[in-house]
Image (cartoon, rainbow, N blue to C red; front, side, top):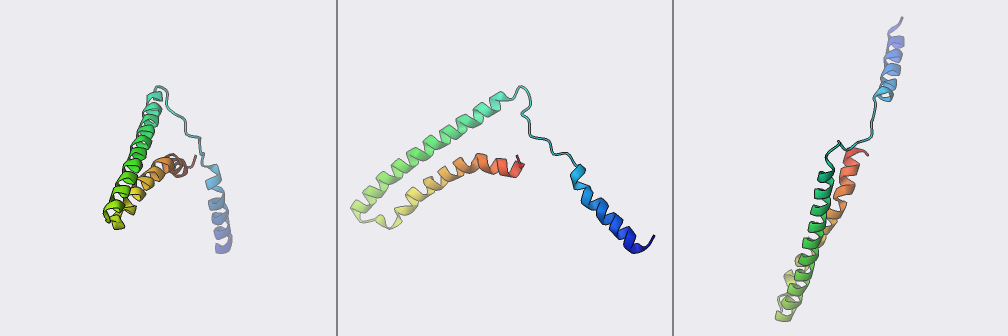
Length: 100
């Protein structure tokens, strides 16, 4: 057997190897239903906090513009909106990272 035939055989073996590795679907362990409930509560609380921050930020922006200090008003509303995006995208990021 020549070196070229050995390389071809090794290449064929390496190409077929990933097909044999199992990839099971994620399954929630029994008795951990409370974790899902806690995560959904935390997500809801996060949305409430972000919603309140946006309302408070909008109020502060209105007051700042009234006083003539409106130059730094935009971050007061953008940071809470960024927080809402992170909270909403959290589940999608976990799904993507877990490969489910």
